Image 1: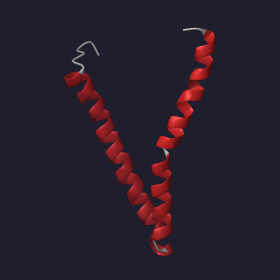
Image 2 (image 1 turned 45 degrees about the vertical axis):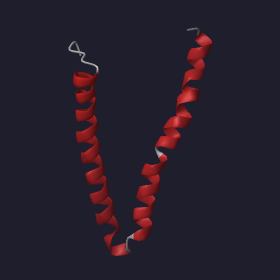
Image 3 (image 1 turned 30 degrees about the vertical axis):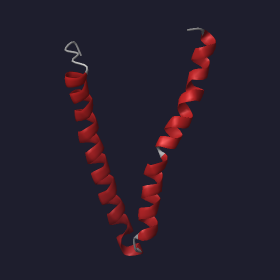
Length: 76
């Protein structure tokens, strides 16, 4: 690899990250629009709690599972 390809790498990755994060923003926005004023904070808090718990549990466990059973890399 040369220096030119390393300089262009962030330009290639950024659009994918931008597009992949769109559903997260859209779902939070829809929750704010759909819920009544009195319940908006509670619904947002419950959504964020479950979203963070699910991602923290599933993603970390999934990475360990894939590393152990799919790649069978015992040195990691």
